[in-house]
Figure 1 (cartoon, rainbow, N blue to C red):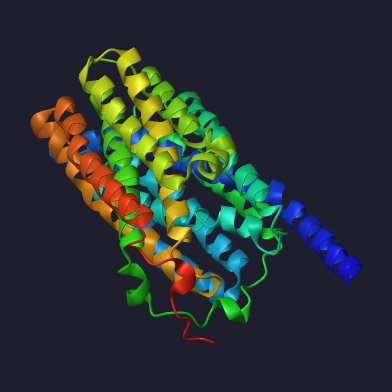
Figure 2: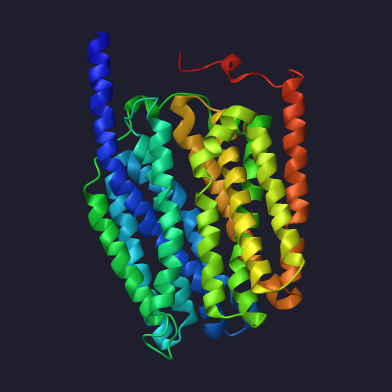
Length: 414
């Protein structure tokens, strides 16, 4: 029996390994698509929008698509398997590039916003790549699978801005129009790669049973985890969304902007190789707190000057802070549910995070246009302090034994 189990695990890990290269490549290509949108969205928006305060609306539409696509992606994956969701997502990515290019060539702000919304739907599907890598893998191999797929984000940080740099002037004077055509081609390549992924449907035991969602999300630990995720991701997005346009307003070049976004994305995903080890050694709350503090430090750097170096340092520190804060908050969420509850709890948490991020993204353009780059950075402090306070209170209560361990919650399914 032991030999049979070991043989099954080796077989499962072999299948998982065969998926890894495809999923990591898809992570890089999908991340490159989002990098193109974030590197160009506010600049194109400023050129097409009827008012400068609406310049970041295309990026906000991307985030709105990200929030809107989270729950449907989970539902499609459960009903038809992850590969169907992957095909639909990459199809949205192709439409993003074609419609975005058409909108730029014809000067349509509304169509460009529709294109970035489709890009958000594509991004929502890509959130599941790391979970697909762990499907069916042995317990020991799952962390490696997730880390290796997340590493694709590093290549996205290099590839996406470089695509913009190489293609932005090809169809001059329609800046970035050809960049979006290339984006559509990249999404087609990702579709071909993902078609070969062996992605089984979730087990029936993962779809039913467990406590009601409301009983889970009202736990103080879940509330703290969700709030920290809501602070870490939207605050990062608020600053990142405004940065390219702010750099242009400060007289810096598009090359400076592309370089900043490139290294920001590398900083977002690079720490993934050791974030898990930090959580195992120091605990998720300390890692989350460090991430939130780094986001506050990034805002402080942003307030200290408007040279290219200041913007680059802000974006790099912001990326590292996001990684520690968001990955740590995700680990906290894992402590609040049982295996059979994971689909609904994780999807609901992501919906809260991306929904809040959409609201913050819509406000970033107003902040930048009406109050300037300094105001964007100042807004970071209150949410970070609130997140740290909630995290500290919950951690203190847990140490005092006031929060019930997960093992003590009755399981209605047994």
